[in-house]
Image 1 (cartoon, rainbow, N blue to C red):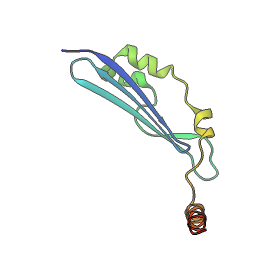
Image 2: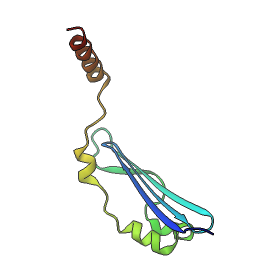
Image 3: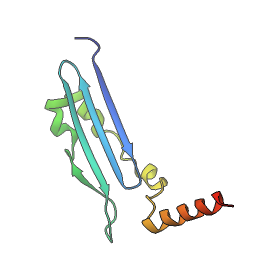
Image 4: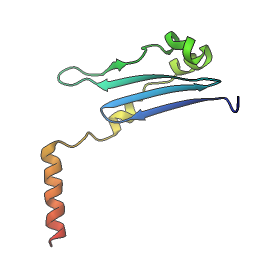
Length: 104
């Protein structure tokens, strides 16, 4: 069977958080949550894919891994610290400034 493992991945940007739990104990089993920052006047985050509680997926990733995942804190501060994706106007301004610097 080889080495058994549990892998936890958290990909955080200013506008999205994707959390993945993988259990490698025989067949590879994986469950993923995808969150997006609310746009407009709403604040906070919304779950766009995956289980709200990991323990609802414990039959796929084990009770122990699911309970561990439910105990993780959501990375609010980390996501807030990361910069937003630049708007098209900001990206154009940066590109223009780079051209001006390159041309002296």
